[in-house]
Image (cartoon, rainbow, N blue to C red; front, side, top):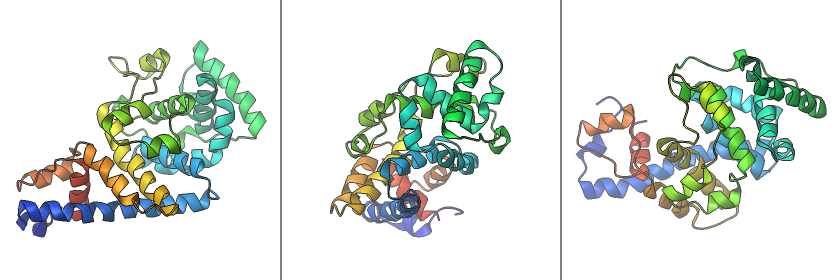
Length: 272
């Protein structure tokens, strides 16, 4: 039963459901501890914290260190000064990441380089090296350049705010919050045999709801002393579909099938 908790398997359905809430809260608490540390090192600025957490979960695990470096190099307040245009947001984020050097010499790439040269001088930015990012996955949807293009689109759209996060209660709310569209230029440039989809897919939005939105709600509301901070987070997780990954598939062998993200998060916690 590698990765599967025998006690959970042996429970009746009613006992299991009663245990899910506690396990999910344990998992939220672990994520909240990370966010609290990021908030403390962000001088108590919640939008900078949210921006750092967003970058953390927009990229793959292998690129989290690089994403944190980027968040420190180009803080949220700097981006807000330049994200009035999508081009400004892209030039600043992709340029500072060092990934512009991989974009070729077409007209748009040249324009972004010129824009970033101006912004780098304005904000004294020394860009990262492209080698700091991992490109091991061959799936175009897992490439760091696409993830940063998506981040730029989200920040330009202005939907990733604490008020929108606190208002998020359903899959439809996630669809609205993460509804930014990347340009045809990137869809075609970053695609393989077919163009990249312009919006984040439902599964990606769900994962952001689980790993980004719900923990921010939990941490932010608790920091303000709201007594319903846990209830708000669990309500959102209960409204989202269960994850379907190799860890959850292990539970299915023992006829344990989560019905929501709350239950799948509980099972992941039980697997530790």
